[in-house]
Image 1 (cartoon, one colour):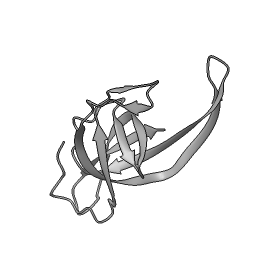
Image 2: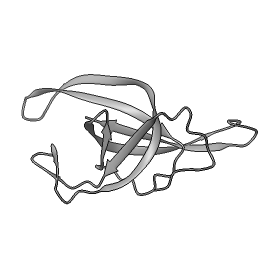
Image 3: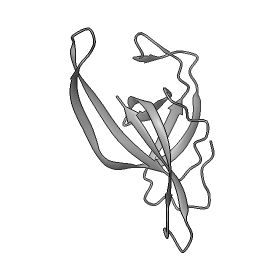
Image 4: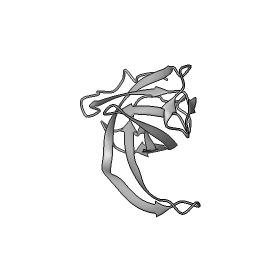
Length: 118
């Protein structure tokens, strides 16, 4: 993981820490051995989405999802890693590399969308 020094972070106003995916108690608590794998700057992309669903055991629960965008290099961010956002733990579901044409000048710009859930 590396912060991209070639870009401005003026629009990327969230400083996000992410942890390795070592957890216990039904994925609710970070293990003591979990360590900060890195830091990146991001912005929230769109709205937070809340959906209700019924689990296989018949329990109705709520799922909260959101998308973060970053220009930084987050190669070591993996699925099931935890991030801290507003002092809450979010689980990384997937990453998507996006290329924005004619952005910040006349060249293509590459960023990453990070899909997370609570």
